[in-house]
Length: 360
Image (cartoon, rainbow, N blue to C red; front, side, top):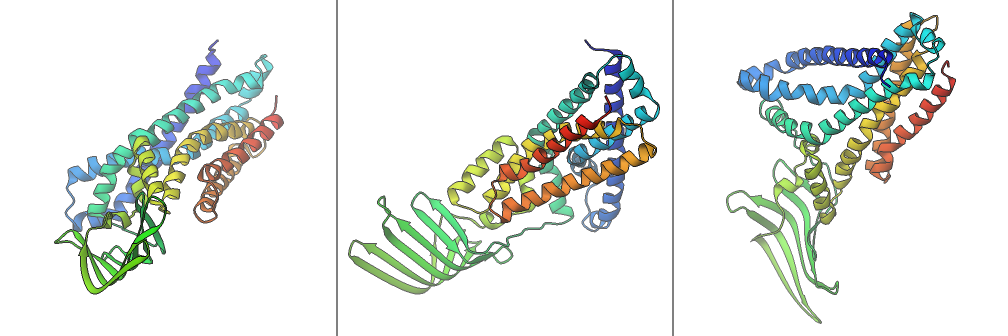
């Protein structure tokens, strides 16, 4: 049965959360505009594009990014205020159990978690396309490719290798291409000191190349200084911007993961981290809500200030833990799903412990 108490807590929860999010987003917009206004003026960014393409899409992205943190702060703030006003003591004294009091908290956390899941997987990727297109056009266009020893599978039996690739000059160093037959025997190998994309002919130019054609026991070798050839790869395959994955919705992200797995690309781990983060992120809302209730429901001498201080410390350690665990996935070989769920698991144990210690 829905009680007046449930509506009271839901109103407090959602009202505090949306007010705090609106406040921090307003501050973030002011700081972002002051930082980028010179770029906007220098590159003659249209006012309409600044407002609608950039900042209108800036709001849902950053609101969702900070949502677990501000869910946590909101819960601690209004629950601590209820505790300091002796409201929680009155609720428990009226015969309502602590577990029953948690129900409206759980309802709001699930509601905001589901909203975060929808935003992460469907709405924000499409809005990020307009936001990032504007950013790359009028602010900065950070193409990056820091990979070394790049291996690509171009087709079921064709494999390519580059020692490095420059996205500025579109030149690859120490390129090789190998073709195998159905039995896995090498039939063709092409090596080149340099490979460069010809923007006029839309094909690759090899420099100082060496070819081997293998037919059973026979082998034919060709050498040359320059050769134009068609290879099933494009310069765009090497031009990765870190934020590009944020423009992929749920279905596009899964297709990109399959594509990168087929190529044997090392970039697949970044896509998988993003995929599993979108699953794990909404659960953080529920976990941090329970931790916040357990911490703030006890009336202490320090009041709201002490609760907020402890809450901010826990929330920042959670964020730091999540970043560290994701580093284990990118550099330590840990599975991306495990890396994203370890913080939730550890802080779930903390939530259970704190709930047991909370006043009943």
